[in-house]
Length: 349
Image 1 (cartoon, one colour):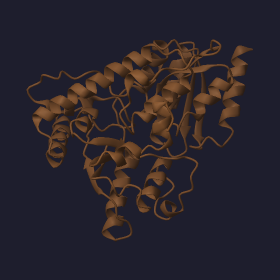
Image 2 (tube, helix red, strand yellow; image 1 turned 90 degrees about the vertical axis):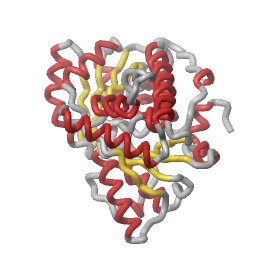
Image 3 (tube, rainbow, N blue to C red; image 1 turned 180 degrees about the horizontal axis):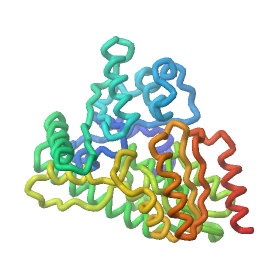
């Protein structure tokens, strides 16, 4: 076991959940952290591995599914999640909600076993009925998990602590960007001892600051490609950003379920969020003082591609160089690292 808590978690993402007794899995990064932390169980996102074959899942899932779902279904079919009490899927994530229905049907047919699949029925349309629907979804899931209002308030407090820690970590970024990607990813699988997550020392100052946007990479391989060119990713505009949990929620509210539901409904995380993505991307680039932006989208991530022209135009108007990489392989085995290195080198010239 390594002394590095981040490396230890990433080496076996399910280890803490297996050892914790009753544990809950989830799939989809827009499920409210406050609700998850209110459960009193260890909560773990289902892990993925971009480099592992998925022959069983490939028989069932069409090509339009996000690649991470194949890893999840392969492990599910092989019994890797059997120890979990249940798994919560987000309806706000296209691939997560479709995977939920496939798991339910495969279980009904007796082709797979595993834990009980549940769904968090998130609605994101900016209207009162969607807000009410999302608040009702929080109440239903809380009731199913035996979470009362007092526990929800505790969950809000715990999630706020995590929001503050992530905000502090993001504001003090000095190490290579790959370190912060690993911290953000490890935090999905197990609690991180905050005081133990010390950033490594950066040997030489980075030649430039990069904002990495678009699809969520499988790990830190794109960050390392940027670092190989002497630059550093100083922020991520995507689902696994250190700031993905959004602003704090007041933890003394009379109706914590309504507060959590409103926060989830108004979140800007995920492909279904209602936000001006060109304006948001440019604002994030300015916030981190980026010298360049890499907009990387995988083949299966169709919805964000519609925003690329407006994003490119907004970044250009702000005087920011942007490398647009669309319809890419999730494992980046299509020359992505070489393209990134060559592009960053051309900016220096």
